[in-house]
Image 1 (spheres, rainbow, N blue to C red):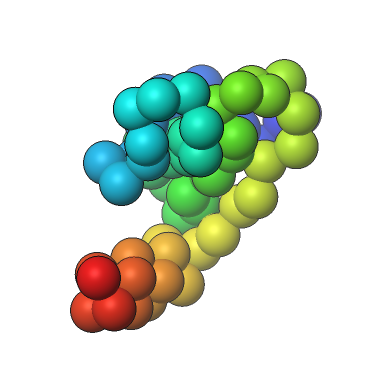
Image 2 (cartoon, rainbow, N blue to C red; image 1 turned 90 degrees about the vertical axis):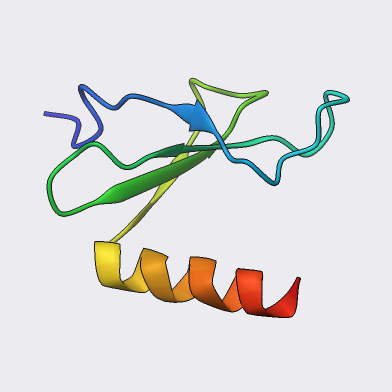
Length: 64
């Protein structure tokens, strides 16, 4: 069973709108956050725990 079955993907708010660097995030699944390239939705996805994902997002926002 694929752990990302049922994932609801949304484009990350910081992704570009010109078709370039687009990241999609699925944070609707219990205990995991999926991240994938929107240009390759059938390709590989990264999976993070919620605490790790929050730390990453917090650090990115801090550096922006």
